[in-house]
Amino acid sequence: MSKEMMAVLVFGVIAGVAIIMLVRERRGIAERKAARGGREVDVSSLIAFGSAAGQGKKTHD
Image (cartoon, rainbow, N blue to C red):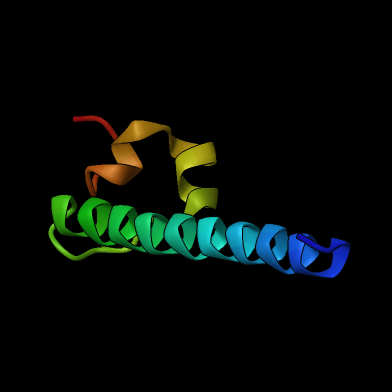
């Protein structure tokens, strides 16, 4: 096998792994969004208010 064919094969494997990881990440994002009832949680709210922001409550009763 020539060096060029080996390079094409390696690039193809890297591209394939990248596509698989992208698909898995998108499915993970969709699952997490569904677990929150379809709501998006702002990361800055999580930093400022903690996990209560993810539950839809920014203040404790």
